[in-house]
Image (cartoon, rainbow, N blue to C red; front, side):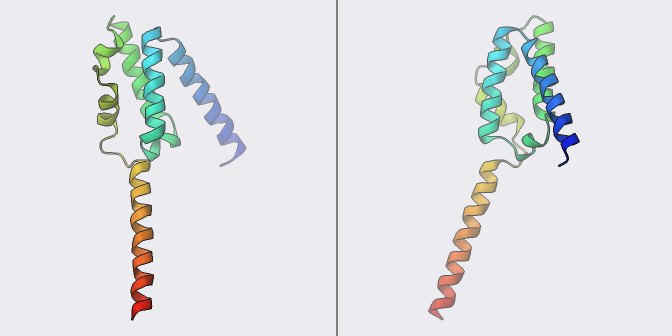
Length: 116
């Protein structure tokens, strides 16, 4: 990644966060919780840009423009809302599970070779 890419990414992130700050307070609070949730359990692609997060902001902007409360947009179970957004995405949990399975398989192969 070049310096130019880093600078461009930072500009995009700042513009994204400016859109979040322009939302009503309840939307901002829920967005920040969604962001934390997705950064912990979310898709690997999340760190490759703001596509999913931009989509959430767009949805929130539309909801706010229509005069809806944020929970009318997401539903009362915000974690389930997030899970539904990423249901078909590869997550860090998937990566970790694959790593654990690979390590166990390697260890078992070593044990099997020693017992032969």
